Length: 219
View (tube, rainbow, N blue to C red):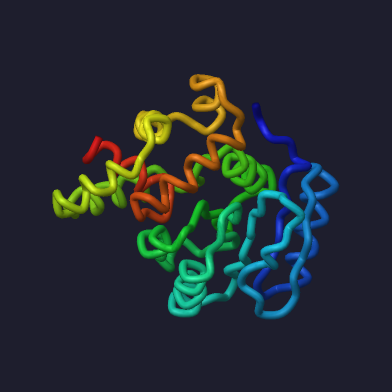
């Protein structure tokens, strides 16, 4: 069962507050998405979101590599469930993608993206997908494949997973979206996401990509 736009709340943060307000207005008026702008230097929105899933759009305009990594590392420490971070207005010449992926990042909207492409990326994340260039994902996968967990630790993590969670992991590794997993297992999209949150905690990974790779290596 696919979630509706009403299940989501989008927060726009970061510098260039007027630009954030302009984008929020367009997303609301043209894409029908509920948006709020948080002024100042806030990084994450309040945790009390009325039970809604949250997308954070952080404006990277005129931000340096070091400044963004400081924010991303803070996000990794303070991250909470149901919150999905996307960087927008990112300069590709910063080459921050590889390091950012380890900090609960779900997507990147580069500074040359049209409004339509920005909306496409946001909706992909709403459907449970990461929005990143294929080349970046492939490089990240190669890097992760070079790492190895001790066998004892891996077996311990496997024993924590339920049969259903292993099924969800296998489908993630096969490239299935949340909606496809929902249809295949005859469960709601919300239940799929609940399984994912528990899986991430049990196998100690920050995102879907690392969960998929863990599944390929260990199940």
